[in-house]
Image (cartoon, rainbow, N blue to C red):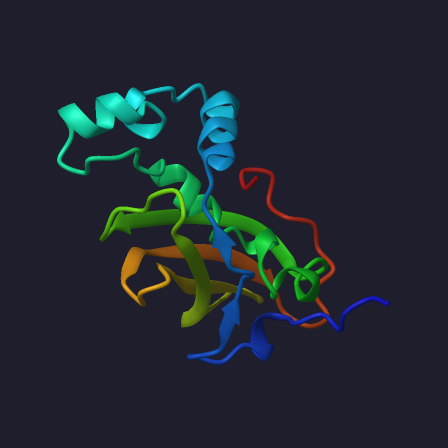
Length: 159
C-alpha cells in the first residue's frame, strides 16, 4: 500500500515526525567508523577515552547522530517519495555527548514554509534527545518540495 503523498501545501508549522528510537551500541560506532573512515580513538578505544578525554568513555560520532535525523529514517519518508525534489541543506549543533547504551529519540518538526515560484521550501527543525530527555543534537534540514500539480523535473543545478 502506497502512503498518501504530502505536498508543500499539506504541511503546517509545528507538524512533528518521530523516527524510531535507537539504542547506540559498539557495533554502531564501529560500523560508522568503517563506513566513513573516521577512526579517531575517541569513538572506539576505551582506554584512550578513559585516560585522554573529558568524557571517560567512547563518544558517538557527530555525523552518526546527524544520520539518525535523516528523512528516510523516520515516519515522514513514505509520505514524500513523490513530492520531495531535493535535500538542500543540513546543519547540526551537538548539545550533549552520546555514548554506547544511550537511546536516541530523533524528531523532525516543521519550522518554516517558504513558497517559491510554484514550489516550496520546507524547513524542518531536527532534534535528538537521549533517554533522560536531554537534547543531544539540534539542527535543521531544508528540502525543496513540489506543490500539488507540479510534475516538472528538478532544476539541473540541484541534486
